[in-house]
Image 1 (cartoon, rainbow, N blue to C red):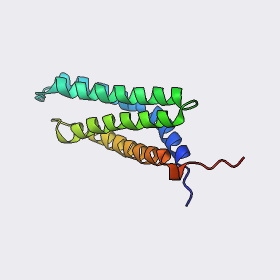
Image 2 (spheres, rainbow, N blue to C red; image 1 turned 120 degrees about the vertical axis):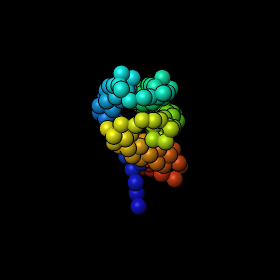
Image 3 (cartoon, one colour; image 1 turned 30 degrees about the horizontal axis):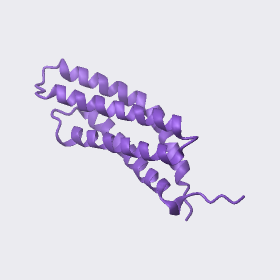
Image 4 (tube, helix red, strand yellow; image 1 turned 90 degrees about the vertical axis):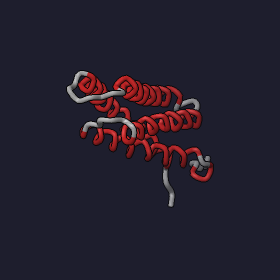
Length: 137
């Protein structure tokens, strides 16, 4: 079975380019809402730092990949995978450590986990030599 891992990873990064503004806007608004809410959020500054670390890692991933993909494809993919692991760590913090977690936050984070794990999967396959494209010229 021939899988074009480079194309799949490129499509996922392109999808992330359009998903990121929605995700970043909603996460920022929800963090600000938790800061000003009646509900007790004892570690709001730590939660906010994790959210903004996640947003900065995703933004860096998108910008660096788009900048480096033409001249250094494998390095751009490796950097994107490493920054995706930062995002996954922040997402798991949001799922298991952060309290309280809003339902909309759980939904957005679930979608982001799906997107990030498929990026890691296809990005790792793209780096493996057995899945490299064969150029016959």
